Image (cartoon, rainbow, N blue to C red; front, side, top):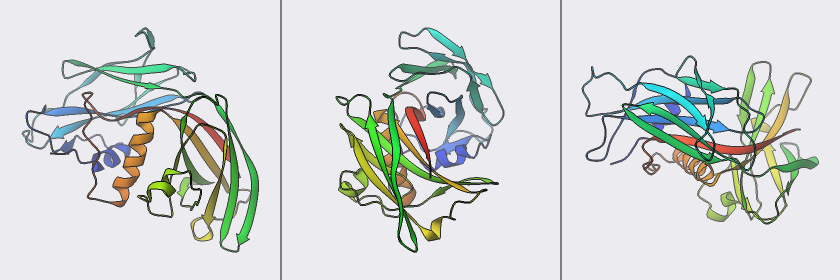
Length: 271
């Protein structure tokens, strides 16, 4: 049997109630859910919540998280997380690229540990902005890798900022090296672009006029390019599949938890 992936959408809304999941045979009454991304120059924030076995009694108390810490690659203590509202835990520790980090905590009498790696740095620049048609904004971007011998996994997102916050924008892309193009599993317009490269590349983003408002003093568009750890890349790709197809489910996590503890290196371009 499977874990319902819509659990993660609900937890992202920071609902403090326990959610239910459908377990395989002999599975625990509760499982911890981790939703956390770590990146240099960014405060560490992770949501920890419960996934409840649907066979558990309604009045059964959920498990408690405690001793939430950040460890380095040799399990040395780097930081202790502070508990905030809505199941959120935070740390001011500054992580670095090309290093491994583990999130460790106590849960229902057991020690749970999730590990990820921050990829190598890279740089980006906008090469060209154009309006090939009245209803499309085309943006050409170059990625320059700092380590040409290392194959890296990238995810690209477009966002519009205004006085009320950020809105993710849909876009199209026809670059043949992207996983969106090669596998044709994700239907355009896309909310995320996926590709793996071993050398510097150019790519294009085509934002349809129906999805954005032209930049003004109070409104802007930004492109977020993230180099991700392999398991984080796979998680986000499968997550996008799940959003468009209710019949697709992510595989069970065999590390004692659901969700993701993902490392990334992020570059943000202002359009």
